[in-house]
Amino acid sequence: MEPKKLYRSIKNKMLGGVAAGLGEYLNIDPTLVRLGFVALALMGGPGIVIYIIMWLVVPLEPFDQPPSQTIDM
Image (tube, rainbow, N blue to C red; front, side, top):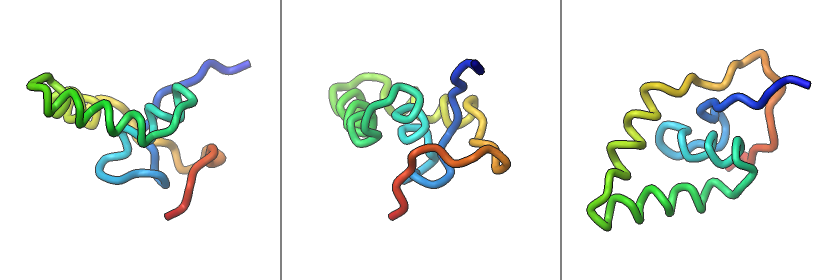
């Protein structure tokens, strides 16, 4: 069994695919991850900074990989 890898989502993304990829990795709704980033940012926390760092560091989902459970909008 291959270990799970964290990728930025290609299909279910709003901005950079970070929240969707993190949601897929943790098996939770990406909307909850997005709300978490917004809550951190509004409470004076590092929400925006963490998102930008993850956008730069986390690789994009490979195109040759079969798509995971994504929602087309």
